[in-house]
Length: 213
Image (cartoon, rainbow, N blue to C red; front, side):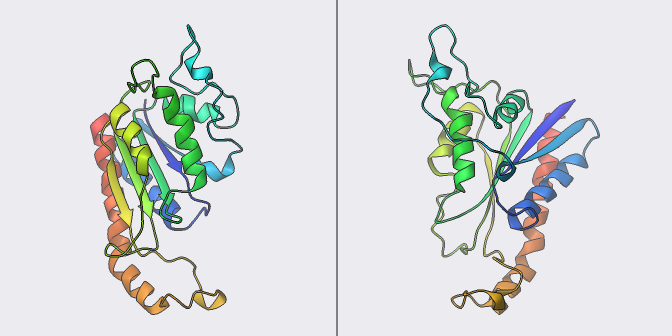
């Protein structure tokens, strides 16, 4: 059976990023019952970023899967045998969440050879990067996945990037000190774009599933 792993790097289980990834999963699952689609929520796991133990680079024991053992270990091992990978994160201060960054360190550092600086993942696979953010297409400070796109593109393949802009931050703006935002404008933008954003990731899920089937 083919497998797609979805990594949810957002803290909220039912909000923007989670909704986008759920739509992707539904699109991928609609193609074939022979494709397993699994979602992993990073905020549910107790793990660290790279601790620079260099266990993945020991002579005679080099590994392109992180050797440090914690709750992330089975996830990394499962990705190593997967057929597709999806990463999703809200954008905080222009970057992915700390949990997503820590995950990416553990995922990609073992791929890097300090002999010749080549990048080799256990296997190549299609990748989709999903971002949700408060910024608009015209005004945002997002670096997205930043420098971490480089090892992903080189070791796995050029990723597809999908962005949902100007997303709702909370369900009820009257309860928070958010006067710098117009809830009316936010609602109008959401009404015009949100279903399109969900459809885009749904279609992306179908494309990935059809590609690996």
